Length: 158
View 1: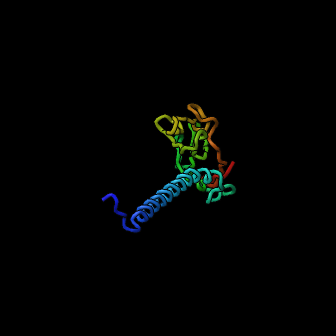
View 2: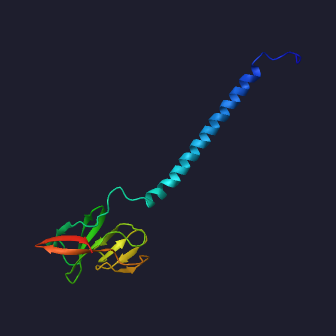
């Protein structure tokens, strides 16, 4: 029986099936490589390119009412696209800052229990005047200029 010939086309079917499997595997590997490369490049391109929302450079924002912020307290507001804080220190002076840590741009918050502005990412601390006093932040918070219009606090870039 070993002398019998294979029916014609028998080996061609196996060859076609093997080739189509190989093409499928090649397509899957190339597609996976493209997806992996795209996912690696996306954060780099996003970081280097300009933001879709224009930066707030010449705007004024109403941060809140001065009478709402007691000594040793703070309120949060938005300065364009960025979080911000309006703080009244224990001496009664108002301060406004972009609420992003100067270490790695994590959002900071006011902690009344310790009377400081605190970054949860790496336990960075700022005093109520925005000066870095503990942890890894390399410099003070970015200040905003304050103007009082009656009881309304208006802030803009310093």
